[in-house]
Image 1 (tube, rainbow, N blue to C red):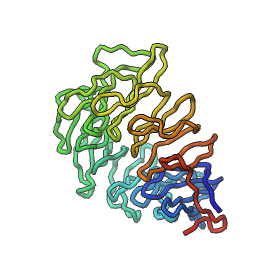
Image 2: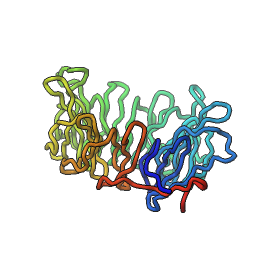
Image 3: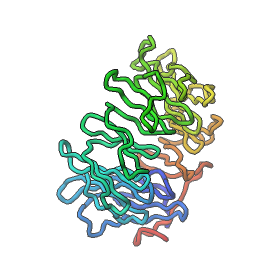
Image 4: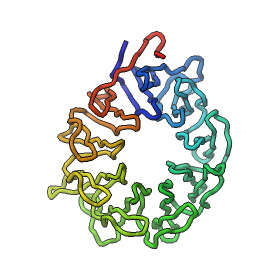
Length: 358
């Protein structure tokens, strides 16, 4: 038996993805085009709410325990629970560590565990953010700092900032307490620019997306003209001139402009500051693996790197292509399929009795 339509589908990563058929969750294996049923036999919970993206062979899973409390843990690529759901919140594995949150509200603390679930570090940190490169941004009380996974989670940057973005290309943006502005630092905690900004996004493809609202530009329809791109030497590729923008991905950025009638349209900008696609689409997602999902007349399709409509807009919703050359598309309300870069739907072997095919 083959199945190609799911009630919920997550993006493939490292050859695996989580899918839901009815109320049951499965692990989809891309190479063998097969499904594996989630092993929930004799587990202390009665309902699986959600499963995240696989990284380093593990995926976060959220369940409702029999006492009604929601908790999170991890499954492996066979659908078995390798870390039982006992934490308030878990994050994806990165460089052999996963931040997990124990306790709630005022008693909240962040732990770090290895792929076997063994806690290797226990810190009284309040919050952990998205992470990049080799460090975790973490908050202790009111201040943010960074932990280095290459040095057994030692403190890489001390806790002195009001906010901190993930490291990327050996740089990150942090919010200074005295000025409430963001400045760019390197991994040695040295400032690499004299300028400060209202917000800075992590560097990608050599440029950082910057928001500034102190250039004398007035707000219009609730948006500011304050988004632009800057390099590590402090030179502007494009000065703040966009209503909305996204960081570069695959050397392309999604930028938004306002039309004279007030409507917001999106286009594609390259790292030379030149439009690949003039702003004309209702919505665009970040480029991933050479493709970008776009919305035109209420329907979704995909653009290639040249800005051509590689897959016609025929879907209710489309999501970014993963590194495994597949994307999730919504073909009708709450019904999802996987497609490849040619626009073909993928089918998976499914044995209802066993729940998976090897």
